[in-house]
Length: 408
Picture 1 (tube, rainbow, N blue to C red):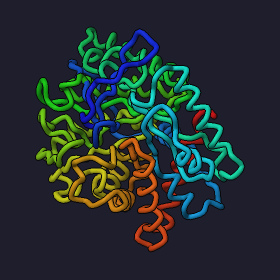
Picture 2: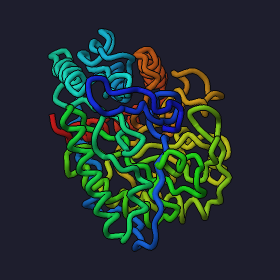
Picture 3: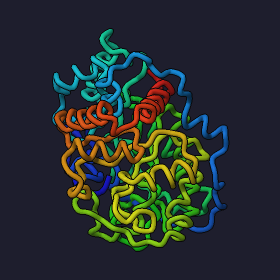
């Protein structure tokens, strides 16, 4: 997410501060916080994913459940959030009845490691209810654990992406990125989480700009971002935590105040630069088998002058799916982002995102109501035919395949 909520929440009961961190689409969203890295020459990444990487990113579409109701199909595409330290009864009920794909956690949800571990056990138990036809598939339990300033849990990874990108020689930086991915996975697994909304693959342009001011980018050089991002992804996914590359096609050109959490943002970057610089790290990420890609909420006139990336089929389908051949799960940034203020209420935004080709819709305003409104928009689109049934079910199939690939 972008940078809406700033580092304020303390991790009660431990000696370590827990920043509420930066995310896109609002004070508690997930996707655009910042962390820079500088670097020098690195070998170019491969330009397309190998068949093996494609299989790794999209495990199998076989485990689709044939008897999900339309409401359950819609709910499987929603990531919910809530406020406070205790998940509300309404969220637990949705999970028990197969109407939730997962939950995102923020600093405000966590008072101690023991507390959040107990909460996750409660959510996992709800997911295993016999009234849930998707009970064989682990819930997606996610957070932003990028490193440095952007961490919801205390501990690893302690270094920011910028700090890792500044390490020399390059081989040592790759080793540090690998260690960060490995340790991030161990940290999340220790609490029961299975998805990290990291790494950031934005290639920042100027010191102190939007993505650099919170040290969220590895480097100004796309080859360095590519090498370090893919090292993080491989190590983290080897630790049984799905990685999320973000924010496609890139927020590296955003100026200091171009925060998609707060305001609409247009990035007037040429198509040639977007392809050669901003999208470049995604080639290596896809080749590494990254399981999720988060879309940016900025508008890129070189691709689509009217719609933010996450609402644009030209970008989701044209650039990410067809050109880069990404087979995994797409996820929006925060649906409540200020960048979407002209695109209607929650239900309308969810419908537009699904029409563009987004699989998972991230409802991170810390209220279950937002997720329910999102699910209602998806359900309405499914029932009215505005969302084609085949494409809708294919999206759910990708989500269930991802869930099946994660530890139960």
